[in-house]
Length: 283
Image (cartoon, rainbow, N blue to C red; front, side, top):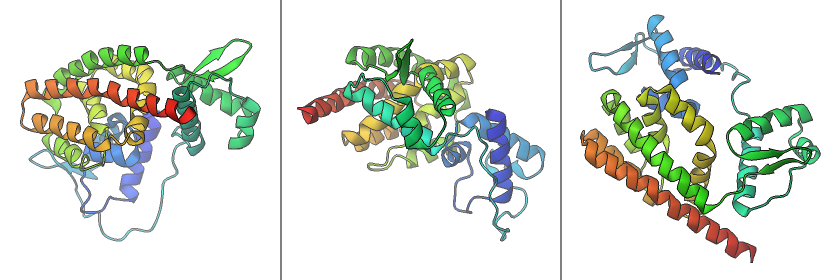
């Protein structure tokens, strides 16, 4: 997947340079293309080697030639490995089932008809979602949404806190001040940007950490992303992100670690509030 994504990003940046005022940083590009930093880094390396981009004396990216002259309108087709809209909708629907405690088995025929896709394609998507922890497969019965309990949330948050603090420690020498500032600017008021967590994992440069978060954290990341707006907690979460990023920008590792740990623990109250709301709605 990374190879296909990096090719798409590289070709798209050649054909469609971002506006002059847009920040040309790894984090900003990852947010724009909705991918991790890994394919962005690979694409940037390719563009630097090809002489399209260069790094300034301060380490900032810039185009070697003036990229903002009018270009013929063109878009490079997205590679087929990128998530499709129907798959995102399926993931959201399953997450909502999980939150409601809906243990009914999914009807493949109805889902195939709803999304206008074949049963084989649907099963492939369900297998991917099972690998990410969204669904479970019961032999001879089918698929159903994961059962969510607060005990399970507590278990994950304890593990996540330790892993993400380790990621911060490993990432510390590689953190880029302009990227941190850009991430801080993405958390203003009620505008919540969770790229901070992805950035720390990427900068840790640990394949094992990336694998652990990809395999065990995808469901919970989607859960927390859904819960903050549903409980109107975006502003509080964004403020916590800014506090973490302020400490990182000021190179205060102890304060950044303590604030990050408190932020992760606070997720429990949000999920508890959301489940309480859902139970009251079902009465």
